[in-house]
Amino acid sequence: MTDTALRLAGATIGYGDVAIVRDADLVVRPGEAVAVLGSNGSGKTTLSRGLLGLATVLGGTVEVLGAPVGRLRERGRVGYVPQRHTVSGAMPATVREVVGVGRLPRLGLFGRPGARDRAAVAEAVDAVGLADRLEDPVASLSGGQQRRVLVARALAAEPELLVMDEPTAGVDAASQAALATVLARVSAAGTTLLVVTHETGPLSGVLTRAVVVDSGRLTYDGPLGDVGPGAGPDCHHPDEAAAPPVRGYRLDQPRPAPDAARARGSR
Ligand SMILES: Nc1ncnc2c1ncn2[C@@H]1O[C@H](COP(=O)(O)OP(=O)(O)OP(=O)(O)O)[C@@H](O)[C@H]1O
Image (tube, rainbow, N blue to C red):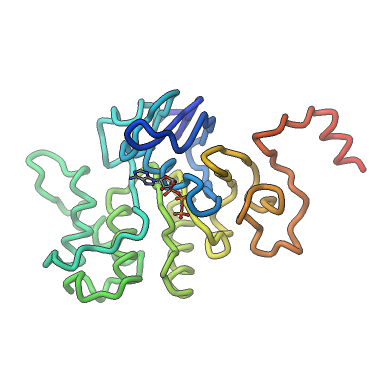
């Protein structure tokens, strides 16, 4: 067990030689549940893909579960739900088979699934509310249900770090609530969560910390409940009128000195 789930230091991430996320510093401790917020095109997906080795680290340090990105040997320790993807309609696979793929990195000797692996797949499918569709072809599911299959695929490996890119997008309110329950459970069990999202509402009971990406820069890092006007464009507390003053700090401005913070608090 490492003492950091994620560590970015002066990290620049992009595609080819084009930098998208620049000079990012971020430390996420094991068990934290972090929202990544920001406007369209600000670099949230690029940041998350950089953690998976799917975007290029052009400079600085990116460590995932204590290892430089791409060097983590046990791939099952990190789960990923990609953005927008549904499962390919051309794939004649059942829900059980697609979710089973998520378990592959955890398989032991000879890659044969054992009872524990079969149970993990069944539990993951159950967790996203699709137990009754286990043997159905994924292509016969709706788009929102297919998103839930991808969440189950990530859960099946029982990852230590779960990176999700807009897991609630296109998913109905009941399924969002079910996902929140699942994430609350895995979070309570110690899984670190990093969730790219535009809508913190459905997961507000799970996510506690937010970072805001604005034009490729991390501009805010603080409590999710304190994200409000000024934390970043398109990044407002769902109940903005009731949101408390920002207690986190904008990263493009100096952090308040402890004395100043105390003085503010005593006003
Ligand atoms: N594969 C790619 N190759 C080159 N540039 C890319 C690639 N993917 C994204 N970009 C560019 O990176 C920038 C940031 O995109 P990214 O998808 O990270 O933003 P985002 O904050 O996740 O946006 P959204 O909220 O719309 O999903 C955009 O200008 C985009 O055009």
